[in-house]
Length: 224
Image 1 (cartoon, rainbow, N blue to C red):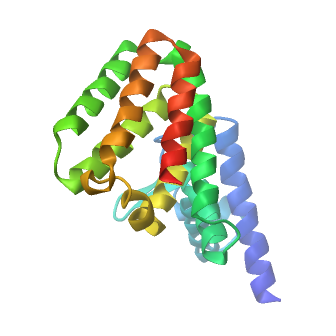
Image 2 (cartoon, rainbow, N blue to C red):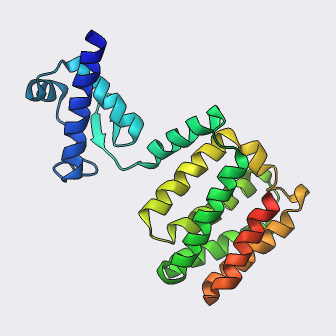
Image 3 (cartoon, rainbow, N blue to C red):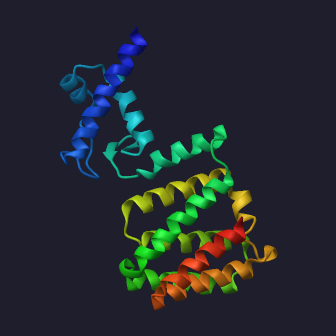
């Protein structure tokens, strides 16, 4: 009974804080009220407030800094990544499912980026691809490859695409890096993959939609 009551009380605190965030009574970067204030305001124990903050931290709505306090954040991709992680560990989805989902995100990102990408974003994507041509260090190749695809997602300027892309990248990096990045090396035909990168950025700059979409599909077919 006590456990149920604690969980119910915790939910009251979580709902209260999320409602304040949703209605912009608390904004990104704002510090949460002290535990004692929330405890008195909501008629719950300070221990319950601490549990609620842990839940919000896990969900990506709050960041906790020891000795400083709890602050509103917008790392919502953390919540999505946690869901994807559980699905992967349970065996509900496999590596191919993640790759297909990533392809869908990048196709939509490309379509939106044709109009929304800034000159700075396209210039950086071009620079990253050119660096990949001369890079020989596998770790740096992985980093640059990820930067290229991240830039494409961000160039969509669609928050939902960006959140899902970052969440997907988190899970791939943590649980499938050997499988995914094993394909992204100079030893495993990376030159072919790099050719797709060049086509994608060139098509983006020239606003050649079908050419860019085909390169993205070919890119992920090659990884499969």
